[in-house]
Figure (cartoon, rainbow, N blue to C red):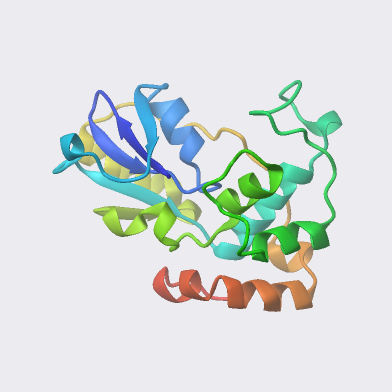
Length: 196
């Protein structure tokens, strides 16, 4: 359930968590959208459809840091969308990410929300296969320029909800990198990312 119908200009955005999507939906379209939808509505057929992807392990670290930042370090006061933010050990976060018994579509629990944010970008739930254009977080400014040109957008892309962290090699122990490399194997292969 990552598909949003953008309005004025009209387009379909496949928002994969932790790839810059909040900057697009809230920063550029300024909440002129509806969704998320679990499938492409008939009314949206033929619209330009785009998505952004990110290095799988960098995305994982960004998500872990978002969930484990602790409320005292969170610039947004109180709970964020009902998430009681507390420090979460990496081992626990990895266990939830890899637990395929937790549905990424059930966001009523912390585990479900974590799975929603950390499932592979190529997972069918993310609907990435519907995109006409797939940009990369690592070159978001240049790739968003393609979207601006296609849709005649003048707005600049802000960077919202930035998570501070180092590279995944500095944040993750080798055995976790090995576990996640297997879990995200389809992302690495289909999205042409590497571990080097």
